[in-house]
Image 1 (cartoon, rainbow, N blue to C red):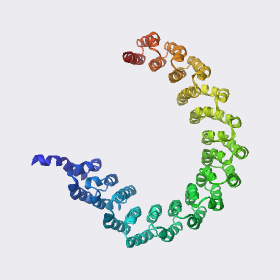
Image 2 (image 1 turned 60 degrees about the vertical axis):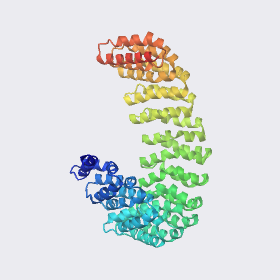
Image 3 (image 1 turned 135 degrees about the vertical axis):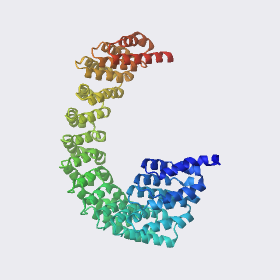
Image 4 (image 1 turned 120 degrees about the vertical axis):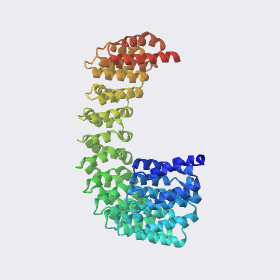
Length: 587
């Protein structure tokens, strides 16, 4: 008998843990529910474990959240989809708790289970569950029910479908704003399952009620419904029902609603089509670009390029560009920054002439902006303008801004510019780079901030990869190696780091003839930090150079360093020698 009970002993322990006072133990037990279920078998899981979980009155949100998540993938452990209905009671209970994230996870798990359930089981178990939640006395149940209608509706009979539509309509008029918010959020998903005939009548009537709700938190969620419903309706119905709502929302008294319209406007334009966009939505968009709330202008400015792509260039120049000029001198730096991050994309839309005449002056004003993020956003998207107006015109206006940013007093701005240099180099070409930017790259290797020096060393390597070893040998390597004699040891360490990065790009021959002698001479430095960095660099060079060079040059240097008075120097030198021995053994 003892042998039969033995496998169940850990299960009893886990069930005890579910009742333990220690939250962590209960949490661990919930996360191992699948282990318990596998050990119990499908039948005992259905008859013992699931009822136990239904009665489990744990009040800790973290435990309940874990349970809601686990039950969503529990169908295989209860015997497959024919028994999926046994999972509904514990999840129904979780749909009524106060904590939002637990309810959301329970609704998500119910949706996942409902999507796999057989049609007769949905009718017998799932639809009554939705109706019970929707009629719940406490608002939490009603909030949760809104997210389940799209699963229940397709399997329902005509009578049930009529009833479900009526219940959803009541939820949209619920006394509690939280319920109406949930109904507004899920309306698009529910509408996608409703037949076209009812979509135009009942669903649109529900939608219109939500758009006139006295709570701005409900109205702003109805904005998302505009785009979702627009995709389901015929174009003419969309223009008749959705377009007036969008236009009204763009003038809503709440800035949050206007913000949502500005954020969703491109999707809304796709729903109503290009003709209505030009006639009705351009004035609405212009209003949003000139809104008195900075947050609305930020959202609208971020969509300016996408919006212009829908319009013809003449309309964009006539209606949108004047607003863009205003925004480029906006009092809020965040508006200017949002504009700078997308304005470059307007160049291909407007074409070369309009870009040179109209956009280039705006670029230049943003390049001189006092706020560094604005200038960086412009520089990071230069390739889009380069394709339209050519590099000569661009470089004349661009270079002063790059030089100014490269010497900015904020080190993070300097760092961001360094990261764009290889991109600029590939766009501007080797000739422009040599003339204008080469000196800057060397200057950064002597920066006071370590992060800048480190990024500059990586930048040198990326430039060598971009323009090739021959160019690097002529323009970079000699200047880098000259800096090894800098009086301050921290700058000498940066050069050693740069050499270790350049060596794989430059190849064996240049490394042996030019880079290695500098590293070996640095091993005589008086500062221990330099010497153990020499040992590290030599170790990184061993795979690159020939074995004969390792024997004649690198090993003797490392042997000498391994006898240094400083313990760290000895450690790294010994480590490099061991690495050298391993390479020799493998060859």
